[in-house]
Image (cartoon, rainbow, N blue to C red; front, side, top):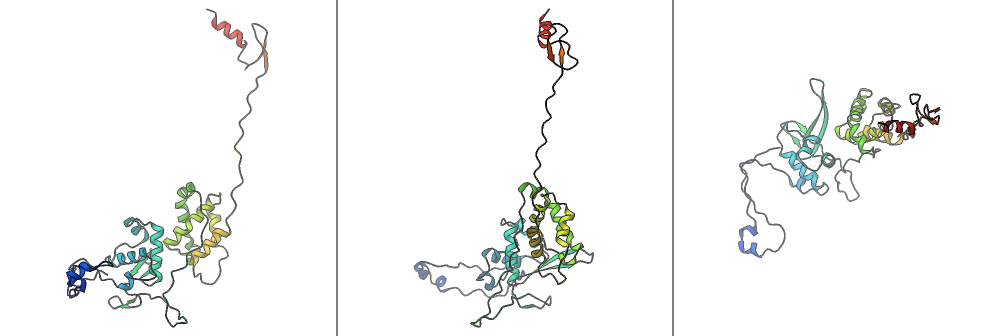
Length: 295
């Protein structure tokens, strides 16, 4: 990816650059002022930089990935810490690149048994890289009436999931993520990517804030799964989280305040007046006030 081409001849100057007078007469359009690179440069094809279907964010991210050295972190979290677009937009751009063959992401198991995501950046989709003896995936075009092969469309977005309150989303985020990550222990087909987990987590939180236990959520997501291979397990889980969402818990009225204490009637030892007071009081209020005022 970080290919240096020190022996490439310099670009032939354009007619505008070779003729200063013509440059002064130029009134519109782009003019290039090019200086030949001799270090720290990457060769990137115009098929990527001028792609007609990729978004500008996907094109820029594709160029950035091709410029990174082998072994550089290329996951969503690392890219979001480098750029300000955020995890949602970066994840969408990665899906675009993946759909058009510029990116390949695979879940592989290391020698220690850990599952990691291996990201491969392809500078020419469909061409073999001889050094690694691997193929960059190319889009699978369908023939059209005109005989042209259109580009493969981006992967269809996952169905929406229920959204929790902001307070619950903050307090229960880790619990929901752990629940989704552990689903593969119940069925290996439910191995989810980091992007799919982030999409489904709010739906799980919406269940948990309705006083549903994690075991109940897990049972709803893993019971009666089809026997056939799951082509998009995240889409199935998103559907279940929405279709089987339980109602909110019943309203619980706050506990009523206890009634005020009503003391029994008793007779003042001084004036024989009836008054209500605890058993410890033997004089009415007037007598207590008069006794306190007497020197």
